[in-house]
Length: 349
Picture 1 (cartoon, rainbow, N blue to C red):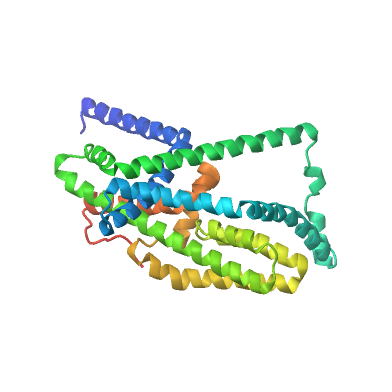
Picture 2: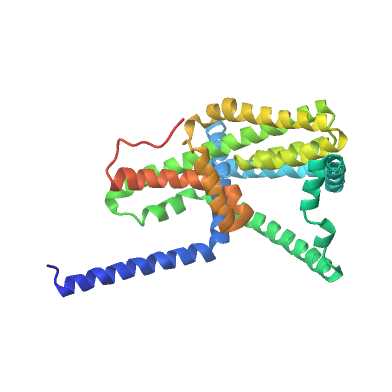
């Protein structure tokens, strides 16, 4: 029989836990954009720090000078590309934006030649009915400018956080370790190191995959005679940063543009994207990801969908590395340490 005082303490403790969880969830909801920006900064810091550490180990440069050289080289390369190829890239992007609606109209005309295609067109909403009036157009234009400024500001914040975190990682690691009991400091270092390694190998895998997909897709589109090869190849490379969903999104405009020229060419383009993705998923990815943890595709897709509802496109882009870091934390801190299941290791290929 539990005495009333003990029961009251337990009930009070349960209320306190429920209140703490509620406050934590509210904090995550209202601070989701800031937290995702911070995590993006951490990813960039991992990239900067790993490259700087390698450079410092193979040259007489100190860590600080190696980091400065890495940052200058990366951003100098971007500036150089835009200076040398900026006008032509901008022209191709404008052409790309103009051709997509025309390709959609061309596909609509071709589909109208078939009975089933005409039924699909009739069932679709009228695009003209979706066009806003002049004040709405002005409002939308203002919104686009505002979003552009916001995106540039977010990029600046991510870069700043990446440089600051990469410059003095020990300060922040020591701050985290100060929150754990003295007897768990060694284990805390192991967890931080494993998360760091996991994020690095994931980033390296994405960089290699993005390069492979962009180059091979560009060559394939050029051989097939598809217009606007550079924007389509760049889109394939950038969207491959988002596993599973990214390749599907990048294939849609390429197939659409090819269909405007000839339906048979659209079929070849679809086969090209499918073949490149199969090679990347079943040949390249297993080789790259051997040193990182394995995330089942279903888990990755669910995480992307949840974070898409939670934080939009930013959440989708960061869902996979965030899930990988959480899997490491849950496995090491809860499964192994709290439950005592040291026989369970981090999932690997």
